[in-house]
Image (cartoon, rainbow over the protein chains, first blue to last red):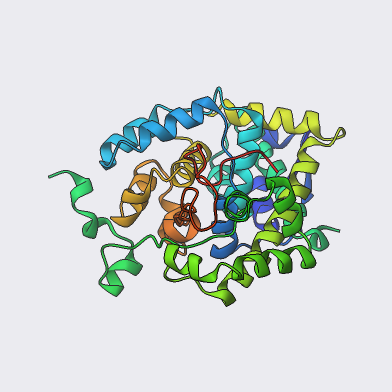
Length: 140
Length: 207
């Protein structure tokens, strides 16, 4: 799994990385239709199913906090370590391809290690699946 | 003074331009499979299946319209035209979700996704992906309504490094809109369905 699905813009950021980092990666153009709108995002949220105890406990804890500092502190110390794959898949669907593209846009130019590039690959891979599912004709 | 008590200073430029510092999270009827199942006394899988066909959506629409007066009591802004749009949207998104989950669970890609999930789980706190996912979970769980209403959701996101995501074109509310509260049907009332035990909006058996 050394394929990176990147948009033309992202490919420019990838090309700016060191040759050592780029070595061993096969880049494929993400030519799918990356678009989204508020109505679809809202409906995806409505259709979100969370079952993971870790996430439910986090939400329960978060619901007791109204203070920004407290929420920031809670979120800073929370990871996805024990979250189920199914819930992570659900959350990625709710997040959608545009949000993932924005995250990739933040991460890719800052990549300095193979590990970070693998993180980019993981997000881009899920985005590719989302785009295919949301706009199947655009990825054929 | 806590930063959270000064939302205007941290509101998005759009908010400032419009002179708003508070937003309202509308309560409205959103035809999710869970809610429709509760309102119409139908199996949730039947509802999900019906939503994915033109005939099924028409059937659901007609059934709901038989209870229009009850729905208006529950949701004063209930609008038949909007209901049709929402049913279409729900059907479309359910199709998309089904295609996506089929891809995720497909034998040929299951291993690849497993590696992707494991990679994502290894991200540390304050990673933009983790932050975005956690904010989403809070919104979906209804835990972020106060933060959203006071304009502080952007502040949380910015403090956690998502400023670029939320700063320019998209306000947090647009990127991750709050989940409108869909009123529960009256317990054993007009539509005769007791409210569900699960407090998470949209929660239920995966489709």
